[in-house]
Length: 426
Picture 1 (spheres, rainbow, N blue to C red):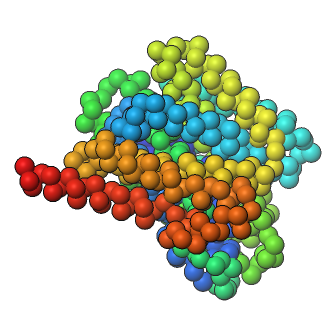
Picture 2: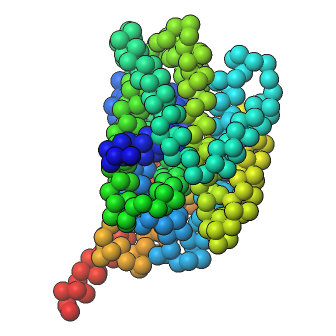
Picture 3: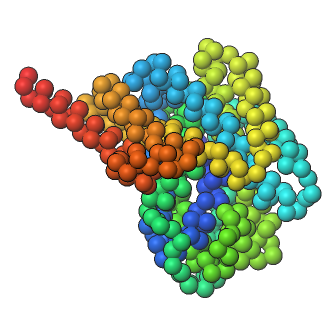
């Protein structure tokens, strides 16, 4: 395989591993609610759903290890706990959610089957792909992603041509920050540290690349995948905004996506959307189950039994949780995301920085302060707002669920200024 083709195949695989249930149902609904401020929403959404995940891929290109390497500068114990929490969240929420979305949007409209039946068949197929570990990159990158891309671009292209071009007023109080927070629901920052490791291990299995060659390949693939994601997200958000008048105000995420496909592709829209949903969701589930299994296999010194057992457990969890409705899974995911997402973002950003700006001391202090100031954001999603309002009132950006940002930045700047003064004194 020549160099450019390998970059494209890897980029396509990355795109598919990122582009799952949330990536499909969230942007059109955001566009529907954003109205005239769709550009602000698109920028905010792209920060957490594209920029941070792509930076996570760059960090993997630099580290070329496992997810454990992301947090080991804080401490090995913290890294172990962090990895357990992230993988537990990944196989318990975003992975099952892909089956739930597939049932609601691709199966239920055509077949009168139980959600448990759908999730069972779905995760049996996921297991088959996960067991054929060596072929995953090529199967997804060469075959599944191009089909996903063609369908998405068809919906967006026809939508832009056929839309009434009537942009209504926004339904959002804070378009930019709400775009950022909705990007959390894609799980893609978490996805970056999970599927980035899948890409690294896939390349290692081929055993044909030096460190620098793999770094260049993964970095270029990350840029291409990121560009593709921005184009698709912006297109879907704009389409949702242009067709806002076609939907009732109480429309749900799935209502908007299904309606948009019918408005753009006509009678075949439902069938085309079903294929798109099934493919997009499936590739993400495969990436999550494979990534989790890879990690556990590494903990057990390369044991294939550990790999298979983890894949079985991940698929069983997927079958059970995936039989619930999408809205329920999204609701229970939010508190967990408000807690783990800020830490993941900080770890990604610190890992791409040069060593002189991201020492162990900086890692520990910035991660700790991020954890501390994420607590109010976490609490207000599990207990009544009035009980934590006194905290929110005193923390900058807390009302936007971004209380951790300013303290983390200040801690990072402070420690690096202190280190710079020490170097000058020496």
